Image 1: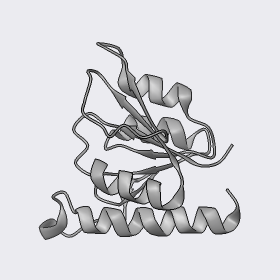
Image 2: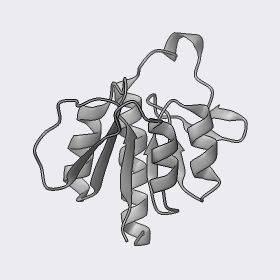
Image 3: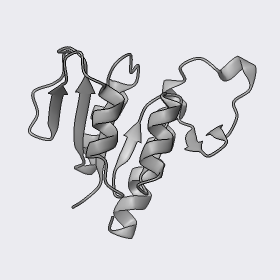
Image 4: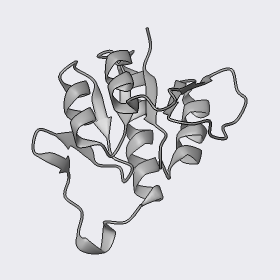
Length: 132
């Protein structure tokens, strides 16, 4: 099974960047949300609406070691890392056991879409090169 992008779509400000890169690299995107959200109708995008359920818990259950999870939820990041998956924040930081790294300067703490896109692009390129 190739890499999938599992997205905690609740309040995710970088969905358009994710769609653009996923289409470029032919990567499946799975959006998890509590209520229906707008998303392009593409065969490589799946939307899972969980209602009032625990979105983070469902993402954690669905995650495999090959997946890349995008979320600002620290508990979710720790859970998926325990399965061997990689987790990114919405600002392009990798989640580690010590929180998001690299630490961003105070002036860069907001949503930084360009940084996120560059980090995701590098990660997907490396995974494809490695055959993951």
